[in-house]
Length: 256
Image 1 (spheres, rainbow, N blue to C red):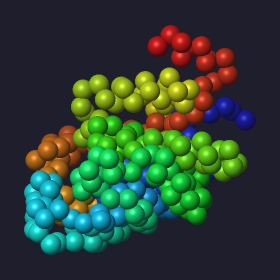
Image 2 (image 1 turned 120 degrees about the horizontal axis):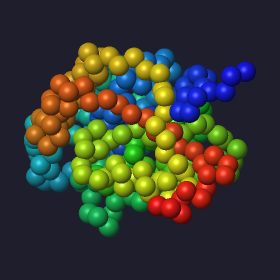
Image 3 (image 1 turned 30 degrees about the vertical axis):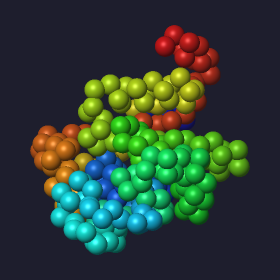
């Protein structure tokens, strides 16, 4: 049997996909083509819970999205999420951790807080592959990534071994140096990120239709993340496989 070329992904790995999303819109923004291509996909949103209390004055992000004092923002965004994922043919699972914008820094969940809940949900879903965010810039993105790495280590100790990937965080990946920082951090940890040849059907119509369902997110995404410019440019989605280095290649870590 001919060996697979570097970067190729065995088809069976993509039989049941879980995309870990920090917020309700991140999977659609960074992995719509993946979700729209495959039939058995679930988006597992980490920061999908209500805060202990909404602030009396809506945050700048929420106010930009049209929310007023007293609105149940999470309820609206969950409905938007269901509509967006229906466009992509994906299921939704929400963890109950609040968005960092509602919490003082000392009260925000840590990766060690999130990892057990994330691991439990992943074991329940039994994916053949898990796609984490690269986890850059935004505290919730960083936490979701780091919690995913912890969950991966724990699941491997338990013999639960899906294949693990990262997808690039929409918008944040364009901030100078941050994607390179994450790649370097993973490389030095011994978990080498390598661009993967994941077969997808890049349907920009479908991606736009899914993102458009996040109605309350569109104004701040346009104002702060150049959403329209990125969609008009058809910025590609890239998926990185996470795995240990090939045997004998470990010494390259010392050269970085």
